[in-house]
Length: 129
Image: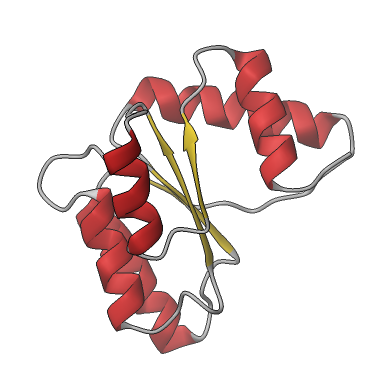
């Protein structure tokens, strides 16, 4: 699942994933949600239906329910041992990184600005060679 309120960033991630799929290196079925509150709904549905995602790519800076709130929900629901949450954010300060890791994120990455950089990041995060 990809959680990001910025449609330009969603577009960039979709293009990067399409590029990886075209090269036959990965086959993904991802859900894209545009808010933290929608992510909470998807997580709760996944808990009920036993269809939790393997990975969540999560932005932190969203209005209303933010990424740290989503991480807290994942911690409370005790899914962090089943679901890898990777934070991809524009924030690069150490405090943000520490807060995300302390809240259960597997890793924290600075959001790339180009398709090439996003493709490389997603490839690395998915361990695609």
